[in-house]
Image (cartoon, one colour):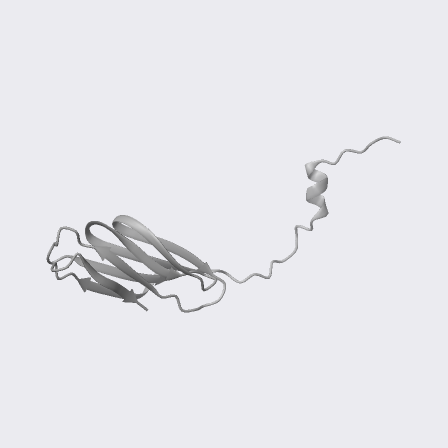
Length: 122
């Protein structure tokens, strides 16, 4: 009896390659935070499974892409540190679905406080 070796081609031939996939296209949701100055803060959002997350970030921009099987509501908010009490600065929260802006809010910072609370979208 001769031992038989299995090649990659044999494994590939085990799976039918002419099967039609029955999957729906995924919905791409982008959560974007744009800030008019360099800072650090936290972003709170819910993911594709409905789990809440809080992530820290630094800089003047934050972006998160989430892919959904079905349309559902995703809320997010941001907490920003204004450590130098800069006046006239702004925060923009943007939600895009399949590269189309569906919700956008611009918040003006007063410059009187280090922390002005959570800015919410959705």
